[in-house]
Image (cartoon, rainbow, N blue to C red):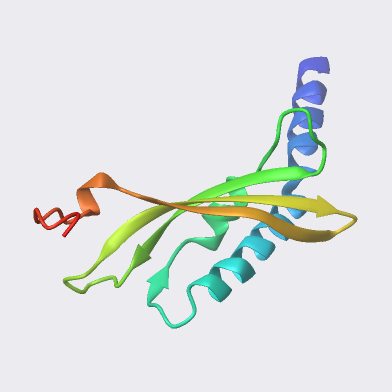
Length: 115
């Protein structure tokens, strides 16, 4: 019986930060929408929220990540990885940094670099 109780308590403890992860994800989504206004893109907000990890040694800084697809279904479609760093304090969140990372396969190298 005791191992089951411990397992349940650990499971509940893991769920305690899900609301903080959602607050952090909401801040990232707002920032993404501002930075990419006018562009066609999509990403999984749920995936962004579940990726939330507390920074080691900090109790208020969260790292989140997901993939963003631009121009889905068009010949110009490409994917980038997104890293978002957020400070959550008393239920409010502010984005500290946002990084879009190109996949090498999506770069179109035509030999004209540096021209």
